[in-house]
Amino acid sequence: MQALCARGGGLVMAMMLWSGLVNATPQVAVSIAPVHGWVSQVSGDLWEPELLLPAENDPHNALLRPSQRQIITDADWVIWVGPQLETGLTALMGRVESERLWTLTDNSPELVLHDFRQSGTVFSTPDDGHDNGHPMPDIDFPGSDDNGEDSRPGHSGIDPHVWLDPENARRALNHIADRLSELDPDNAETYRRNADAGIERLHDQESTWAERLADADPRPYLVFHDGYQYFDRAFDLTFAGAITLNPEQLPGLRTINRMRDGIADGELGCLFAEVQYSDRLVQTIASGFNLDIQRIDALGADIPLGEAHYGELMDQLTTAFVECR
Image 1 (cartoon, rainbow, N blue to C red):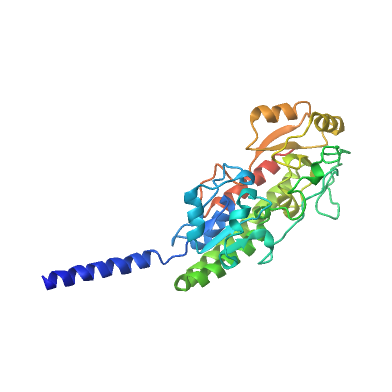
Image 2: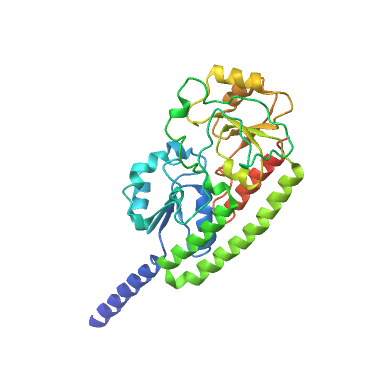
């Protein structure tokens, strides 16, 4: 009997040790799919991060289930973009200890950050006014209407779409490798090796994206919601304007009519509409613009999660802009 108990005790101890080893890997919770892809590149085959907000959901209105809140409570590290994007998570993230939280728009570590572009202006990028040789239409876009758009919260400060600049992806991969190495020193070499491989792969991908866009020389683009300035600045593309500053509030009839009056045939290449807007709504607002209407997605709702997610997302965006003629 004593021998049996001894064997049973040994089995229990072995199971406890095995359980401890299984749970030794870092528990990382990430808000959106592109950033989940960054972490997945660094963690590799060791483990997978937890995604809080599926890419098909609008992060601006995101609310978490109790089980997702528990994931944040249990996580060793929580990564989100910031209150400008995942507005519904602001109070919850405010209760996460600073050592467990990375807010990308806090600029620590340093990322390339841009303020929201101001309304009531026809914009070109980069700031020195390059327009790729295309004439810019004289359009007064939303914000100058007397409808309070400029004063709505979320339209001043840092534009949160930071993942759309490949330079931020490189900086993030480095930081993720450093942080995971602190949380899991036994696998530090693997994290660093994975991050370096991801950065090298990203250099090659970025060269391809830049070459495709330069060859296509896309015309100035119009978008429903201005969420792509990190992409257009990174690749020297020309932004004409946005239909609405607030993705939750659609433009009024006066704004739409003024835009129709201001758009001259052939000056703009396309109108990009985010995937969350219904086809009926897109057609209603775009009718009479005489523009190529294309769907665009900054989160990659139709792309599988994992290491390849970010590259495939940027591939899709590059193709959309290449076809903006």
